[in-house]
Amino acid sequence: WKQLGELGWLGLTIPEKQGGAGLGWVDLVVVLEEMGATLFPSPFLATTIAAVAIREAGSDAQQARWLPSLADGSCIASLAFLEPSDRWDVAGVALAGRAQDGGVVLSGEKVQVLDATSADRFVVAFRNAESVSLAVVERSAAGVTVEATPSIDQTRRVGRVRFENVAVAADAVLF
Image (cartoon, rainbow, N blue to C red):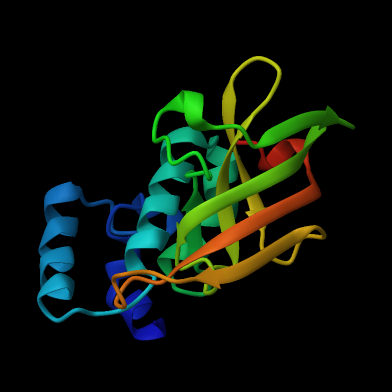
């Protein structure tokens, strides 16, 4: 994993100012095709998707806070979006985010989270009073539990992530 970071692969789509290569999707596809050809089991896809979510939805300060560690491989991340309803649209996001002390408190669960058991942090979709938002949550946060779940594809590890009154500071809410 560290070698992938040293080679610059983990930061292909991360901006240069955040430690990445600043390249595009075509460049990423070349790496993904080769990984697919060898059935390379790694958290590469999960971390890349989480990094894109932070890049697209995060402020400059949030990007500076989280993207460099994803680019260099010192952190693994995953997007936690899908819920037990199996709906992929915005209406399927039911995980509750209740406002508290300027931040939010998350309660609910996400399923089929790519590389959940390897992730150090999650980009979590949640529903607040007005809309759907994203928050960055550390796996080590109080109230976060992660468990592996079976998958038909043994090269793709997935898991369930539960959030039980997880406090998220305002500066960790992406939008």
